Image 1 (cartoon, rainbow, N blue to C red):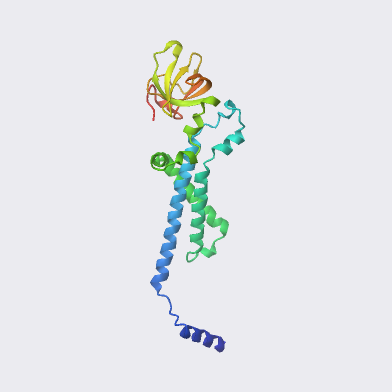
Image 2: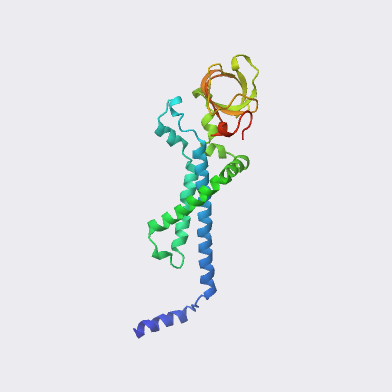
Amino acid sequence: MKNISNEVLKKIKDNNIKPKPRWYFITKNYFIWSIFGISIILGSFAFSMILFIIKQLDWDIHHYIGESFLKTVFISLPYLWLIFLILFIGVAYYNFIHTKRGYRFKFISILLISLIISIILGTGLYFNGFSERLENVFLEKIPYYSRLVYSCEKQWMQPKRGLLAGTIIETELPENNFMLMDLNNNRWKIEASKVTWKGKITPATGLKIKLIGKLIDGNSFKAMEIRPWQKGQGRFMMGGNNR
């Protein structure tokens, strides 16, 4: 035993090894906890975006375009934000196990704790409107962001498959027809003589809507069903009020 102790002391002396000060370990611990906290917050941002995108999509239209529900889910999932959520939870886990007492916790326990905290915070951010504001910032500031996520806009801008969205710009046409400016700033003549209006909305200039129907030609669309752009809009808003 003495020989081992002597060898250790000799090695420390020969290599000029000095003990690290206490403040080093305290600072390191605080830094690791900070990274853990930041990872959880970023994970909550990612979850709020996942929730926002999922809630914005219309999951009942798959049969209108001849797709199965499973295929619609596969196409529509916000993979970009799911990857970010997994990444941030992974970073949070890595930093947690490197805290002073992190080694005592099981792998699954750390992951569940990190995920639950991110879900709770992310849900709060979603209901506070944060995710919608963040989405608008990404669309305006980040090139090609719209190509990376399957948004509500992308879902409804498929006129060849019977889906169209935009804002009413003129209503005084025969047989309840009207003119629409779609989300890509293209003008459409909408045939709406036998259309079903959902959500208790009525046609009005400035109203943003979603249309299910049939493409007639390059700029004409026959609508069979019209919905408000925002879910629940018709319950509280009438006429041209929309987001």
